[in-house]
Length: 260
Image (cartoon, rainbow, N blue to C red):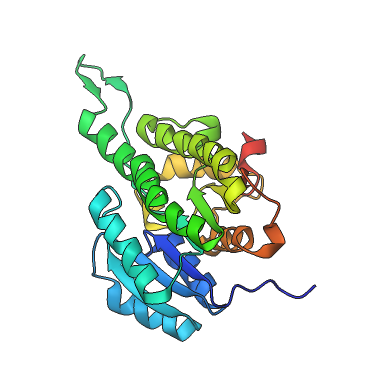
């Protein structure tokens, strides 16, 4: 079967400067897509633009805080003004601020997850997906369709020690994905989520080695994933080969869900 391509598609990838976002942007660019890469900093802008062009895509790097609704609206409008449409949005931007809900040590000192850590993770990982999708959908409705892809996580399905805020945000993303699938299908807008397992990104480097080793032990394939593994899943879900896949949560976790 001939590989499904997306030449000419206009794709927004949030959190595009590194990790899964960067790999996803490159995957779409390799098939001729026009890629708008969003990140909160412009430090990686020059390298990102060069890589996307070398991969075969057109590029627009935008400094965007996905929690800032006016900034998101302006960025989406700039994409539409430049390329005339938004065909795919990959809501990839995310952060972690891990801590136990409540922890007590041998001296009786109690520590707990700070409210600021809760707020920041919920704002970026959940509210940011809401704000970005809300800004993109009217354009997709007017143009007759589109694809929305959201970053969930394997931990949203099973929970994870020390990640109350992160798990809550990703479980919320799954709920929004399924709600939007019900609302937007009639507009030919497909909505799906990808639930990565543990992927070799900078975010993973902050995890204590013993916890990471334990997660690998619970992964049937006995390794962490590569950003490209997730990028390929996003690309397939955006393609016509997945034209009847809607409201789904695709686990890309090396079997971790069944291994737990």
